[in-house]
Length: 405
Image 1 (spheres, rainbow, N blue to C red):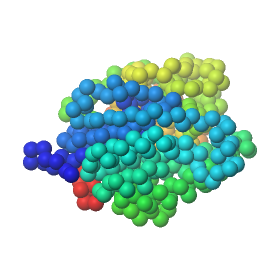
Image 2 (image 1 turned 90 degrees about the vertical axis):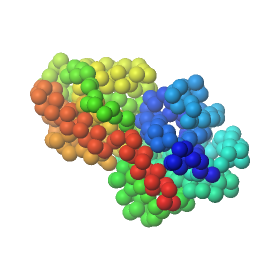
Image 3 (image 1 turned 180 degrees about the horizontal axis):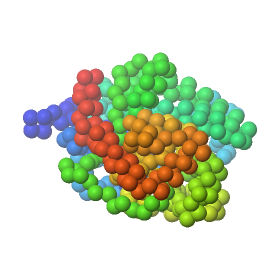
Image 4 (image 1 turned 45 degrees about the vertical axis):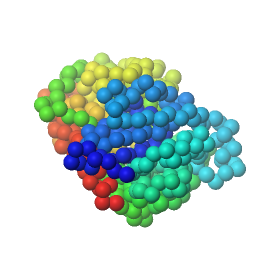
């Protein structure tokens, strides 16, 4: 039951997640952490039931001290490593998508059912499609609204990745998984009481696919101070942030280093590209002018040290959190159309967008050479971020939507 805090209704919200968002050191963690912070800022109580996987090992101790009174977090150990044997078995003997089936875990289900038996919640929010296996379990014990927060249109990531895959066998595998994932995604999404896409582009995509449940777009927001934030200018160096175990990042960087970076270096031999991301392929480390940095907890510090963010994504879906972070800090951004998809970017105003290697390189070189233009792009990017990605206003709007369900 909803509780009262002063004169305002205080809601109890259960969030299901395939990882702990603390610390928020990757895109989806930032998105989840932003949602938790947004609810807490509105005075609501949050219980987070998070998987703890080998890929994203976290600790309950990472929950920030300032959130411990308003956020309860339960972590469940889940070994969902994508072993090649399991992937082949799934391909041959199953019709389920391997991308989501490996998140179907007995221990997590038991923890969820136990929590629902012990506590009552006003809303249950699923952070992403991979948790949809547990929808029936929630329905059995929870009578209130159940919401899917869609970080992406998941199957489109696989479709787009397949389109850029050169290896025929890998391309075929990606297409099979995309089709299976599409079937699962459309079937499950239609069963929720509401859908919260992370971009308006994704919201429209779900509508076009026949999903008619109530929906509300909620960007991944940031906390902005009332005074103008001051970002260290950093040097006129190019940078990229993203984990390479996410296929769109690996494919995008391969395209950048093969087709764009040689054009930039031919014009400016002293140009540097600094890359922050785990599991970087060895081949990327050998490219002249490119420095690979180990995965660091202070990604925000890395942003501060550089000025020109390159986003060469040619596949993917959802919201590129790193663009939002870069814009918030006043960084000049060069992105592909897919990279900027769903973000209020206007090329030539608050960012530069190009899909062809020659144009992408030309934009990057212009920012590298023209400090005044670079500064102008950064200032406009910062204004846009404040207008669209304020966490407090996003949280208020979302709660109002939930109360109407």
